[in-house]
Image (tube, rainbow, N blue to C red; front, side, top):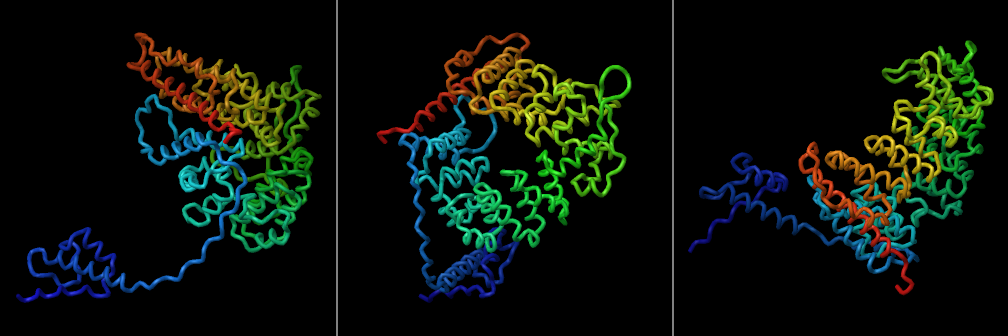
Length: 545
């Protein structure tokens, strides 16, 4: 028997990618420069032969690579691991995250385990636990997929997590902002700090500056000053923004020099930081300008606020951070006025208005339609200067409709004002707002309240949800608030909410099936609260562990 003729080998010049393309598209659509075998399927057979020859050639051409150096041993982490039950729970949460399909549709009554990971991490970090070594890969993968998990996950992962992240390019995000980690020199090691500052990558330098700033603000500023003039504009912007941490009058000289920076964004940031220092020279200059524009009314018997907005934006104003060109739709004069007022110390206004306090000043009528612009600028000043008295005055009573409030109707601005107030006062104000106006406008406000929600706030949210159910609305209209409630309500409220899991008779004007959906949503809420309580108990330190 004669031996079959050997198939011609593929030319060396045929790349592997072309073989794959011909295989995917078909040899009739993408012929290959290889002689076909005899027969109807000769072209396909020749393609397979060529792929086999190409594979053998590639394998034969490989040489044993030299062994890579072993990585340095993982650093020690003296913190204890969580108790066994808590470790099992974390594995369950991470496994559920990995298996989640991410599809939409009806959620059902079961808790969403992936949304409980942030709370588990926060509680574990509060108790000072470290991540078990075996869970580090899954933890870093979860943090890679969800940026909101990263701060808690990296704290829990500790130095061993950062060591592991350095071995996998997919986890390099963990090395950005690794302030205080084993990857940075000790902030007291002047030589090591200076070497990394001069030679490190940008992310390493940002992390280093933050670490030094937290330890010694003056040393961080001096370090930044050594290379400031040679830094790129975008880097200078990030570096100067880091001065927000521990900002004080000692930073004024450096920031004043930055007002002459080549970059407009750097100048604007420097001006903003200086205006947050009420005793700075820039704040004083802005106050002189603002006081010339805003004054007590001089006509009639009733007090009011008179406004004469600037007619020009001169070079000195621009040097102090006033942006001359307004956004589309804004008038120049109102744009300039707002910048002057928001950059002026709030302490100058009582003297301007005969000793009146913030509430009295805000309550004064403003002439010629300037009230909205003036109050919005005062809101920004109160947030920037962290002034609770002015924040209270501009928020007004929670029962007042947003459109008639003393400061601003913007819920985003109100959220920023609320963040200036003490935590308990914040929660009380939002509870009053919900009691007066319901939940439709409360989502942003709830986001700034401390968790778990204080009892008055939690009960006002649940009562408002119950009222919405009785009104016949569908629960997904309030899905955002319901999701917040699952994460933020005190777990101790679960037993009290059990009654809401029943399905009452629907009123005639209710949306079809709405009560069934509400019952399911409340079941999920109660189940989630009980699961959170179990998680907290599992994470409680066990002396016998």
